[in-house]
Image (cartoon, rainbow, N blue to C red):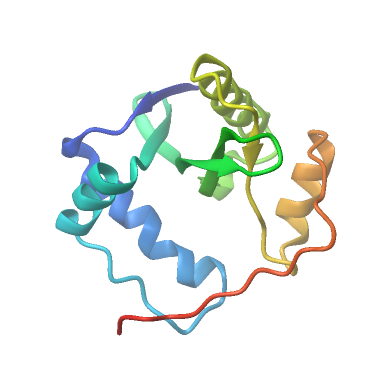
Length: 148
């Protein structure tokens, strides 16, 4: 498996993965991502996408951006979404992908990585437990939509 940063030529592929999020997470809401929004998001918020490839085919992606850890007052990687196509799971690719993201974190001199998983997704939670990620207790995530 190889990894590379997505380019503007990969936007259709990235949008395909993003459009799967509501389906994967059993949400009624539909993704409204466009190429223009994705380009703007990258430029305005320093969001990055890494693609995972196997035999020249894209088989997964991770979308991340830096945030500030207020406890250490240093940047860390927030992984907004990470996904490996189902047929390739349980073969070490997820672990390899997380290692790759950790290397980006180290080379960027960020203090660590953070992400979340749906509380019902036992497969993802089990994977993150297995790779030694620490669960963060005492926090409930909230959301408020401002623009419709």
